[in-house]
Image 1 (cartoon, rainbow, N blue to C red):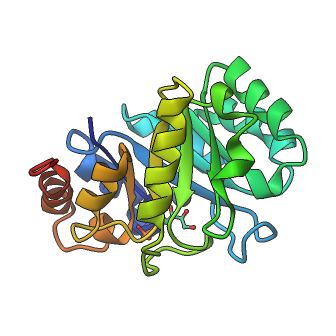
Image 2 (cartoon, rainbow, N blue to C red):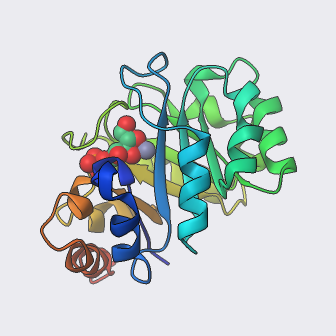
Length: 221
Ligand code: DX5
Ligand code: ZN
């Protein structure tokens, strides 16, 4: 099953509720990028906005924490309404403790890794994870160019998941569009974050449909 998660980072922040209402009913979840200006060179939103989003949508909130000290903050994001919470392996000194703690809150626990980080950092925590976010751009900004080697990385991660007898969901974040979504789905990805390719388009609803039909398996041979 393919899930499309529009990223509100590319929406008009002055009309956030309108953007959310527009994709409600055709998107599967909403991707929310939390940046602290330290872990990444950009600053976005925090718990009050997540709380406001939660009150305005039935879609699950997929919160991607690009912050330092995620161990200290994840509970606050959960209380604000985060349904899926991913933390960066590169920003967590105690990754095992942090993902265990996230799962204990009842949220879907995930780990995100940067393009330069090998999938082996996930080995010891993979059985604890609901999802892995493979970054296909260096985090910090929307609208960047997709890093092609992510397709092969997805394939290797999917092989590891299958070989371990797990069902971990692979989510791809950054530069996803109709031109690469089929290859990513074929490689094993199931959730696709889409910022520019949804909210950067004239018709975000048609853009989601286009992503979905591009991702649909055609020739699996
Ligand atoms: C980048 C963010 C992404 C971003 C994706 O740091 O984590 O979620 O919003 O935007 P696009 O799809 O435009 O690359
Ligand atoms: Zn993200």
